Image (cartoon, one colour):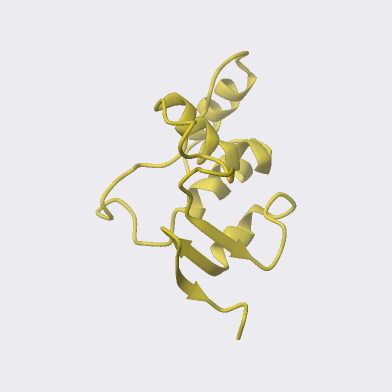
Length: 116
């Protein structure tokens, strides 16, 4: 990861009112499915964001900027959400996002290594 990335994220994070978004919204051509956790890790380890702020960059901030915060971006009653679970605390160790144990998409369980 380049020094340019680290500098840009650091500068953005220190700019009052600046909102940092994460994710490509791509169709899978940009990333191999399941590797988006590397972006969260880069924002924390190379960009200097807190894990909480990096997680918000990929969820609630994206929803806010796209004008759909009332429908997605957080786990609230009436909102559409895909859910993942990991064994540890991603706020304490952002790399936990690389070890997803459970995935629910559109209300359907896609992966479940927890209940086994």
